[in-house]
Image 1 (cartoon, rainbow, N blue to C red):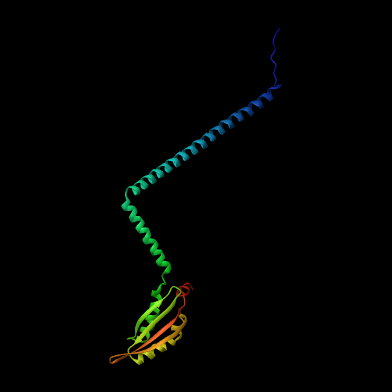
Image 2 (image 1 turned 60 degrees about the horizontal axis):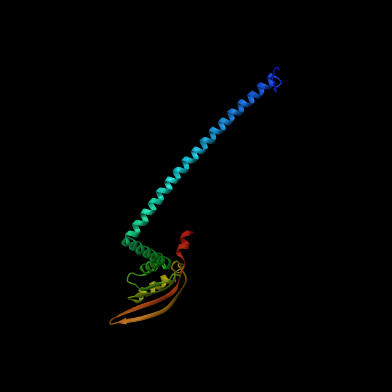
Length: 193
């Protein structure tokens, strides 16, 4: 018996359509594989680069730790510097920033009279102040009192009272002393406005 081939594709047109579809399918699969290969290679390059960076950093860290552990003098210096830094931070937290307030008092004294002296000046972190001003004669004393009662001077304080008045006589001279107590306004808030 003679074998006959059976063509499952009934017509030639259907076969050509299928051949085109398989051709495009082959091309898209090749392009997909190519793009996937490019993506995989790029990711592997990025990961190897990151691994090199991490290895270098770990190696550098290891060297630094070894150098610190082998040199106790440097370690003690570092701990000394750290303690000084902590002390400095604590000082800054407790500091009352007294210089601007001192300059306010000093400017008022020099504006009122030339020979008056600021004997003591104390200020706390909450801006509570206590200061003593001494005068060589009565006219300077009165001049400073006028300045102390003036609005520009009093505007620097939340409250200010004359706590004490002393008349100190030494040999042939008489000194007048005024002891003030009060609280400064926060001059840093005024600077912001």
